[in-house]
Image (cartoon, rainbow, N blue to C red; front, side):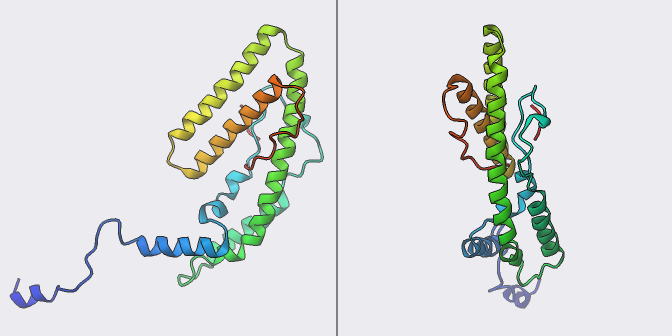
Length: 202
């Protein structure tokens, strides 16, 4: 290569591995702060739609019939996210955070209340079921809940997916609430229900 050609490369931006995305991360952080919602939370709505895990012997039909499943607000948020993705403007890649935020707030409030009511229903059913067991079966039942809780915590500690991690930790928290409810049956069914999160069967 000629000396003149070598000199012409001076002053050019050097591509440093991992650094080329820093401006984009900064823009995202700024957008999240401005709109008051994170990109991850907004796009994790399908995970949040999942119901709390039911006890193995409990059927969905045994939950109260008046619990809203949040399907309407879910569809509204889903349409907003899909349309925002399809019509994304390269100059404003985070516009859907502002446009879809009202839908997300309604959805988050609905699923939070839904999950509180489901957990109340689970604990009510479980106290009656647990009360019908003999002593050895009760011990096994509590051990089973504890095993599931430990599994969720273990799985959460071994995943790099923050959305999945949050879901697993929430499942573990629900197990802890169920266990505490059975060990302290005089506590209110509403106590400890203020947990957020997204019915699978254990």
